[in-house]
Length: 215
Image (cartoon, rainbow, N blue to C red; front, side, top):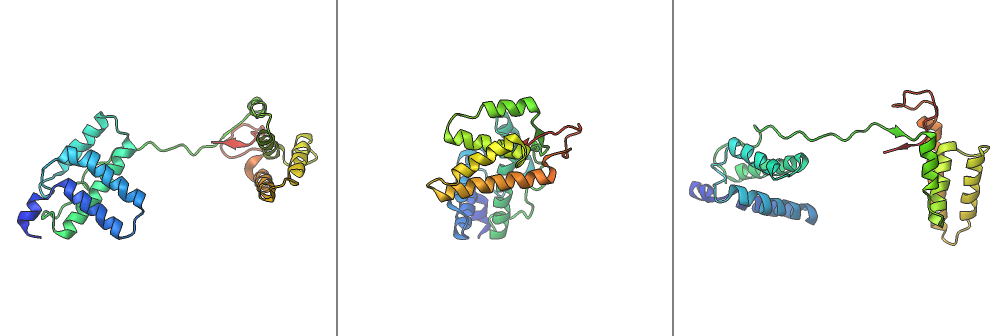
C-alpha cells in the first residue's frame, strides 16, 4: 500500500478491515460482531481521524485512562487493548502502518481481579437452611435428594436412604432420560464423597465434616 494511503487510514478503518479478515478466516459471527462493535463504539470515537501510522503508546494509555474514567471495567479495557494490539499487528503486516513498533505492546495493561478458586463449605445450620429452601415440588424434591446424597452418601444414613428412595421412585418416571440424569447426578455426588467431600477437605482447616462445597 502506498505510504500516502497508509498515512490516511484511521484506527477505525483498520479495525473494520481486521474484523473482515477474521470473518474470512472463519471466526464465529458473534466474535466478529464483538470486534466490530468495540471498533465502532470505542475506538472510532476516541481515535477519530488520527492516522494509524501516527498513534503512539501515549495515545493508547490515554485511551485506557479515559475508558476507566467512563466506568469501563478493567477486564473490558484489557480486552479492548488485546483487540487493538491485534489490529496494529495486522496493520503492520499489511503495510497500513509504516512504523514497525506496535504501540500497544509497551503499554501496561490494567490489572484484572482474579476470581477466587477457594472452596467454601456449608456448616450444618447452613445445610439445613438449604434443605428448608427447597420448594415443595417435584423439582424441589429432586434437588433435596441430591443435596442429601452429596452430604451423607448412600445408606445406611437415614437421610441418604430417603434420598435413595426418592431416586428409585423417580426412576420409573415416564421420561427415562430424566431418570438416567438423576441417577448420574447421584453417582457424581457419591464419587465426590469418596474423594475429598468428607472428612477434612482441602481449604477447610477445622476437623469437622464441612459438607458439600459451593461456589
